[in-house]
Image 1 (cartoon, rainbow, N blue to C red):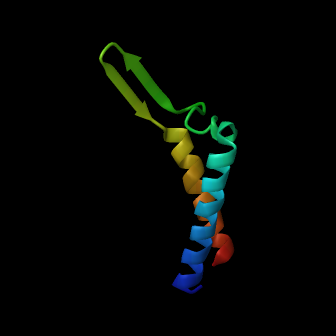
Image 2 (cartoon, rainbow, N blue to C red; image 1 turned 180 degrees about the vertical axis):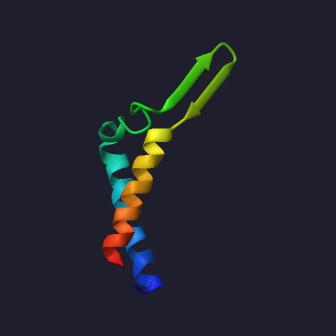
Length: 69
């Protein structure tokens, strides 16, 4: 697939995601709070590692790119 076409689809996906985030911000509240996301909060210390969320993003991007290839 041509690089220009891939960039076009990625841009359209980002515009769609931005519109969802702008007009329906509560729709994506679950992202980053999935089971498996590591969150440690103590006095003066905060650690956050979104392991499950990033695995989900990786899976969706892999499927998206494989579908268009």
